[in-house]
Image 1 (cartoon, rainbow, N blue to C red):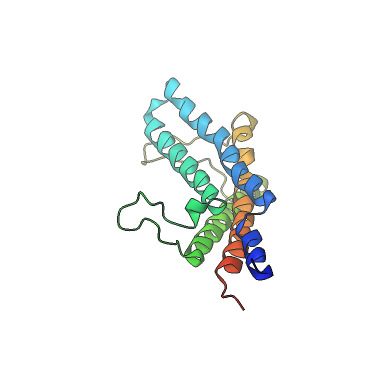
Image 2: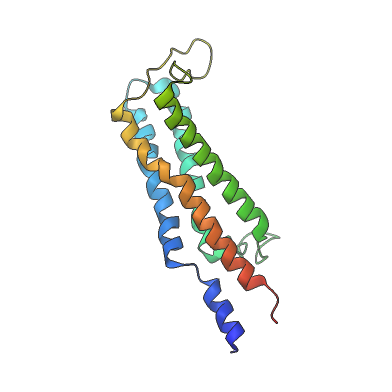
Length: 174
C-alpha cells in the first residue's frame, strides 16, 4: 500500500467529530418531535395529522444526516433494484445538505429576530381561515424547540466533512 493509498483510506473515514455531530442531529430533533406526537393524547386532536406528519418528516430528515458519515450515504444499498451498488454523486448530496442546513439556520435566525423585534406581531395561524390565532409560544413550548437551533449548523459541518472525504477519496491518484 503506497502512502497515497494510505492517505485516501484515512480520508475515507469520517472525522470523529463529524460522526458525533451526525448522531447529535436526530437527538436535537427528537424533543420537538415527541412533543408534537404527544398531541395525540390531548383534546386538540384537530391538527394531530399535521403534527404527526411534521414529526415524522423532521425525524426522517434528521436521520438522513447519518448517511453523510456511513457508507450507505456514498453508495446505493445492494438491495435497491436497478440502482444497487452504484456510487451516489457527492456534489448533489453536499449541495442538498448545505442548502437544507442553510435553510434551517435562516428559519432559526428569522424566529429569533421575530421574537426579539416583533416583525410579525400575531401568532401562527393554522390551516384555513377559520383557524384561531394561536398565542406566541412561551418557555413551556420553546424548551422543546431550543435544541433545533443546532440542527442547521451541525448539518452544514457534517456536509463539509463529507465533501472533504469524498473529494479526497475520488480524486485521481498522482
